[in-house]
Image: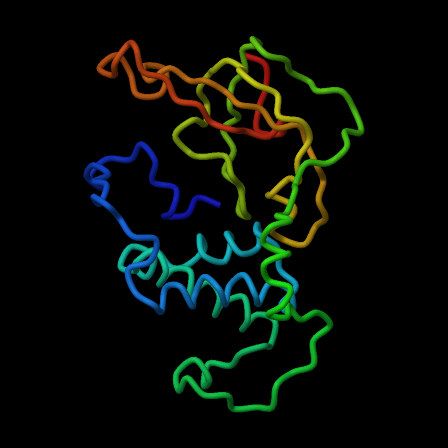
Length: 219
């Protein structure tokens, strides 16, 4: 999906200005939003790709006028509303309007540390050999899917070089929509700045992008 979140390389948004000594959270409510989003994934039944898609498919005006964790909160509300775990009235009032729903999985407080420490590996066994190898020249396909994708717009149609083969990983374009894992080979691809942005770009600069095999074709 070509959402407003995919603004890499776009003009008129200004430079990225890092905040000196930036804290992990700027307010306590941001910490709570992160905790709620992670904890609700168990009873809500969503995965990281579904969670990303919920945030990245917010209306552009809402997305661009929201802070990072305001976007996370809006994404959480969207995920819960879609699954009948939250109503518009409850979002407006901040109070439960109905008794708690029965869910199959609950992340209990005593299990949080263990779950976070174990992480969520997304590498999967390969069903077939990789199509590309390190050093191969490839071109990012010019795709514009209606659903979720991690194929950033500024590399579409441009040629680069495979610099690393990461193995097979869950394919987010399918996983985000409950279509199964459909694991594919994942590669790091190096693009020159001039390939992406023309002769005015620095001849020394390059960009590395991790791209799944369905995003690529031989160059």
